[in-house]
Amino acid sequence: MAPEHARLRGDNATEIPLALLGSLKDASEKPEVAALLAERLVLESRFKTLREAKPSMSKPDYYRDLEVLLLEIARLQQSIDLATGWSENDADS
Image (cartoon, rainbow, N blue to C red; front, side, top):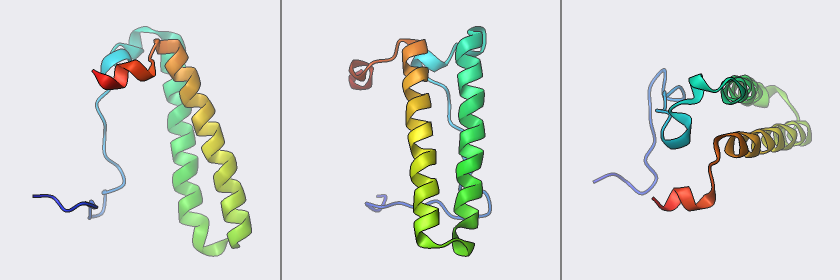
């Protein structure tokens, strides 16, 4: 039985490949979606870099930069959802 707050540990615990399911499985056939997913990888890399820089940043600077980045990620995800036709109803299936 897994604990309620399971954690991955190890050298590559933060780098887990995820399968592209549902409307994303054919993303490579749709240039618009593929470009958006490539942009998401860039933002994920920026997030990782920001997280690594956290110890050397002041709290206000870190949280300001984090907020800006998370909003960019959220807006991009909305674009991905729109481009793939994904909706909240898909989460129920």
